[in-house]
Amino acid sequence: MSEGAPREINFTRSVSYQVDPRGDFAVEHAYVQYFVPEARNDEPPVVLVHGGGMSGSCWETTPDGRPGWLQLLLKRGYEVHVVDAVERGRAGFAPGHWQGEPLLRSLQEAWTLFRIGPRDGFASRTPFKGQRFPVDHFETLAQRFVPRWLTTTQLQTEALLAVLERTGPAIVICHSQGGEVTFDALASNSENIARVIALEPSGVPKTPEDLNGTPFTLAVGDFLDCDPFWEARLRAWSQFAGLVGARLLGPGEFGAGSCHLLMSDHNSDDVLSAVLQR
Image: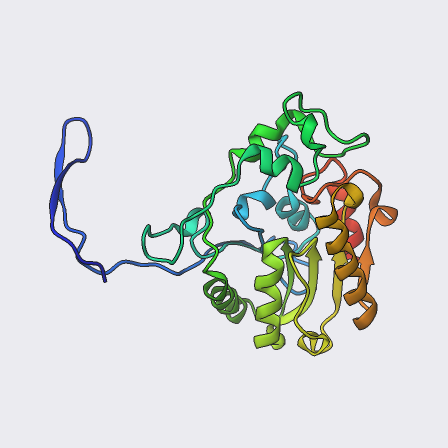
């Protein structure tokens, strides 16, 4: 429910319209598109959970137009559900509804945070040597960035749990901030998560008990020694994987040169093949 006074707006150049901000609005929902191939395999359905400042579009195609993991999974016979989390992408958002200001990632931040290249290589678009990301299409990637709030993780977790209630036990493939959402859902109800495949998650489950025996694969890219931030992340991932006996996959399994966006690099097909193996 929102409050305020009605006001006249120019709906288009030639049409005026009275807007009444008072009323009920649909908010705090996820948007999910799903696909069931005719030649479906016997594996559980796959739920794809994107990272922060992005939407489900990151799974559809790579920045340079190659088939994304959505397409590759369908070709393998998987039923696939692509999530746009609460306040992201096609789920829509409500200004002023959540605490804090929304953030939009800059190209400079993405260049360094996603480990595409060194900071001083941004202006000339000079990536790390051996980089697999399609650098010529970096701006295409940036065009997919969406605003994000920092106070909606619990809402995103609840929405993911609702998705899993629909799918039943599923393989959840999560990326970056989507890892935190997935891990919180796993701790709340592991019965509907058959397996977790985490691509460079922003954290790890709070306790080993949160896994409740759920098979867990963690995949990491290359150039993790470029910044203390990523070195710390690698230590945390390695420690947790060793503690719970999870599969920790890296460049040795799918080739050198991957950045933070493992589903977008030139070797994304090889990464998918590696993480799907048991």
